[in-house]
Amino acid sequence: MPSSRSGHPARPEAPAGNTGFTLIELLVALVISGLLATAILRLVVAESRFIATQGARQEVLQNARGALETLGGELRAISSAGLLEARDSTVRFLYPRVWGVLCTDAPAGASELVLAVPWLGSDAAYGVSSGGALASNAGVAVQSDAAGWRTARATEAMLGPPGAACLEGGASGAELRQLRIRGLSAPIAAARGDLAYVYEELKYDLGISSGIPGLWLRRSVGMSGGALSQQPLAGPVMKGGGLRFRYRLANGAEKQSLSASELAEVVGIGARLTVQSQARSGGAPQGRSDSIYILIRN
Image (tube, rainbow, N blue to C red; front, side, top):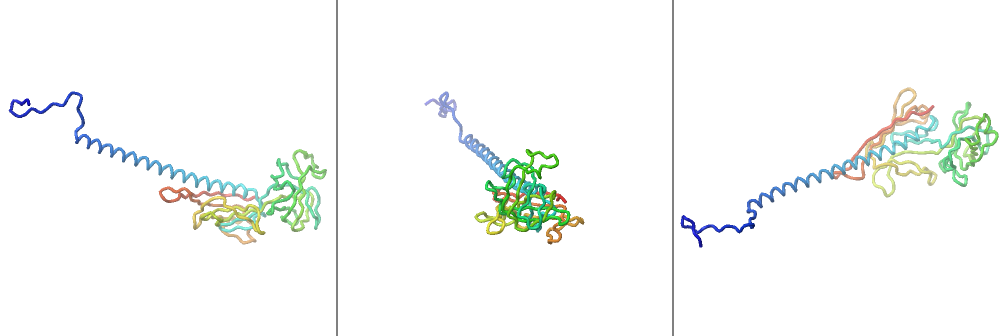
């Protein structure tokens, strides 16, 4: 064995091209790799949480805004006499499907009303089925100078070309239809030229629905068992004030619940809806509020 000048055995030299890492170098590399992996993992988790939170917020925003746009669009169409019930979390009203005027006089006890209405493109747009039946929550409202607004449920409506009485004044038959309303629940005496509309009774409230957890904003869809059938529209709604209506009266007062005598005095309706996401972020649902204010036509 070769020896060094000091007399000790010489240290063998590593063969050329066979160098490697020392143990310390490997440990340092493992620590750096672990730190980098931890940082990347935290970044991915944070990004996932951010995406989940944004998705949940977007869900509730679209949920609340879509429901309020539907409610607002229907409330904008009602007349002051079309409001039937006004509570802090319930509103019930007559939603006009189509406006028109009476073509002929309707004496007391008349079995039908004949209206001239604009052509809407299909029978279904008037709420009339192919067989001429009206929805179970439909009816007609007529305004006269002597008696004001009067309403009655109706069961049948026949849509057809306008008769001669409906075409006076230069109206075009291509723009108008004649709508015969029959099966009135109460007689309505009306005069030719009186304003009228075919309505659908609607109700928005807060409640539970079978098979769906939580409270929901509900909208009526037809009738069942003689009562309006409430179906979920948006939610789940936050408990404790998740849905709030407020009503402005002609005298400037604002109330959250009205008596029957105050309904005709309403000039504006405000609604605030707070819903929570079904998707969860960080174990908790996201909540979001939206509101609208609607002026009521006189």
